[in-house]
Amino acid sequence: MEMAISVDLSAPQLRPEAVLQLIDQHAAQRPAQNILFKVSEPAFRLHRGRLSNIVAVSPTEAARMNAELDVSGSPTDYLVSGAEWRCTQCRRYLNFFDIYESGKNHHDNEFFKIFLGGGDYHIQVAREASLLEVACTECGTVNELKAPVHYSGTVGGSAYTYL
Ligand SMILES: [Zn+2]
View 1 (tube, rainbow, N blue to C red):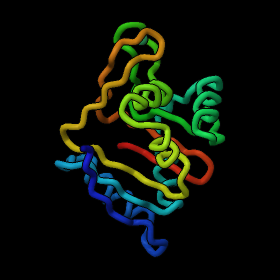
View 2 (cartoon, rainbow, N blue to C red; view 1 turned 90 degrees about the vertical axis):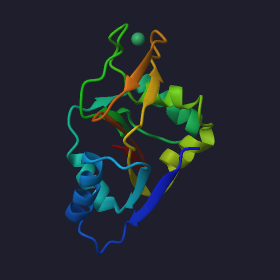
View 3 (tube, rainbow, N blue to C red; view 1 turned 120 degrees about the horizontal axis):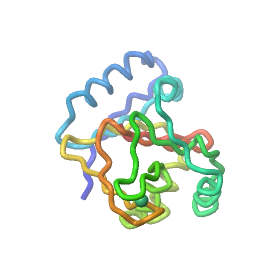
């Protein structure tokens, strides 16, 4: 259903700056299909360091996801960044926990374990028509996640970001 093109840019010989430039250009002019880039740890760290306006999950929310997925992430390992994103109804700052809870309707926990628990680093560029609907965990209102907001999960040595 959700077809993505996979591109492996994780070779250590590639310069992180050059890899991110390629990815950024695909995010600026979005592709027709999602593109999943596998990147090296240095490239991901560089990307992560450039994120701004980070909203982390609460300690309670992190603990719940950790227990359900059998991982050990801290609140800042689960983040939304790029722009303020609040519930249109109750004004809650929507965060990774809201995305996770809504994602359960589409994916089982195995998906999230792969998403967050693998040993690889990924950056996914969302396709042009991408629309993510996320229900607020406070009041249940469905909100649309719009670019350039993006979310990221990092647990242990693994990470996944959705530009
Ligand atoms: Zn709400």
